[in-house]
Length: 189
Image (cartoon, rainbow, N blue to C red; front, side, top):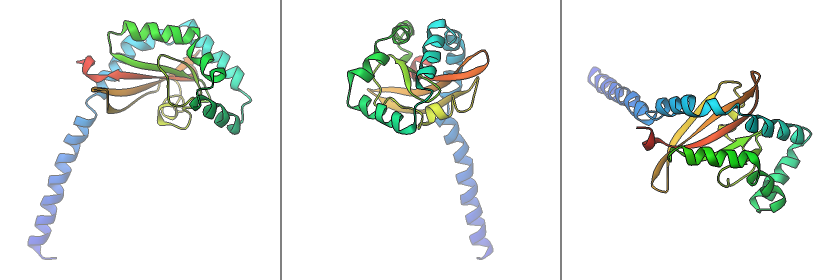
């Protein structure tokens, strides 16, 4: 490769590298305001007795589940088996989450709490599956430990720009579960 070709290749590489950070910053522009919103407006009520009691109870209930049991529960959820769906959708924690969603002024579009196995404990809206343990929302919050906040990329949903924000829920500085919120990032401005 002659000197001119090397210069052109270096210039092209520098051009690409100078654009990449700007693109990454644009992509992640929602992370800081979403994190700030969660820390200010949501984190304070994650230690509410309703939240903690529901997760502790679910952790005890699911303690001995084997992976095949979790998969069977997940399949029953997908099939809309009321014996699996109703205890999650119709409980005090779900009522609590619905109240918080309604009080958010449209910032929170959904919320669901998971136990230490990644199984849903309560929620505002139906999720497509019961088990979240195989997904980043649980792995990058509960899986990281206390105080973890994971802000996922923004996706379009019914004309809104929604980012899922997942937070570890702790009791006495020990991670016991996690929660995921759909956050309308346009409402954070």
